[in-house]
Image (tube, rainbow, N blue to C red; front, side, top):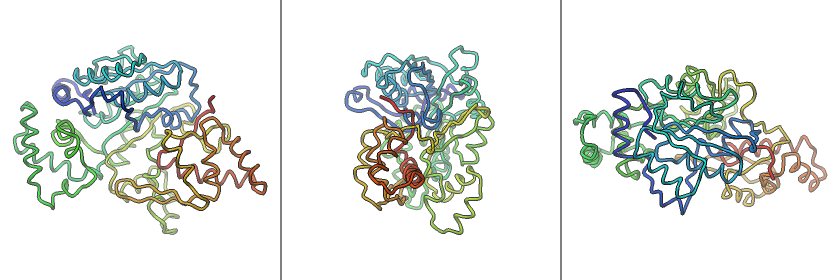
Length: 424
């Protein structure tokens, strides 16, 4: 979340908020101990969903982080790009001096030299001379603008023809209880010009008195006001402006800016088959367009607090999402911790995951373990196929392809496995 919003009054309110409470709260000294990662914009993830796994890491790569706040996306990408060794430049823009100072300090602790910082509104990007960018991150910003479509169009104006965006906006159903709480706090005299600390104090007094029937208190998936400190509380309940979206509204937002959605993350959350087993219902759902199935899954789950998605221009010249049938691509784990997953599976096992109280179970084929243990980010699907077939002489190429597709769909569905060109 960051200050990079609307012109005049709205922009001023946003800036005051984030000068007082930079968000999320970060201590630059912590960079010596850990790297915060997430979606969108994790490097292997964006390569998979924007560049079909075929981005040439040896070519210059220009990134914009619009409304980068205290720097989570910027630090993550800057470190991952530096580790990858290719030529890259990240431009981080924000309106808040306090947020920029924290982000710069975090980059300095890591001794990264691939980031430039600018105090700038994303609305001023067209005509700024900063573009074009191969990739744009805008996480938790558009829903704070007076006109989110204008803001997204401003980003699209500096996007390279074959580039893409990683975006996050709030999800309407998963934020049940937030907006009635905001209304109560406005009724208690939450003037935009009031002292921020005084508003936080009033909010905490109200939260302590919420009855058990209150929807915010009954929503176990909203916790910024409980564990995010004053900055988290202010951002959730005292923000000068925010709105939330359903899947159809996200699609309309993208279309209004001349974009199309390539993927929601994590894919399994937007697939009704992750939640349902009734074959008649699934058959009916299988006849619906992809976005309609995503909207159905959102209504089914009821817990999606945010929508993370990747988008490209409506006239994007080629495929943007990597194809699991392209045997020249290499499967790659999201991170080293996920690689242990392959070692833990036994023949006939199922992949399980829990997301916001929903338990997922994905059946895996008999060779899932054999496939996953051979993934190292270097070997292509074709090389893995040859190895697995050599160890299983009766296995046909078609049978391997079917088992790989099922395995990949499950593990990619929970955001742990992607595809890219082999490296090394």
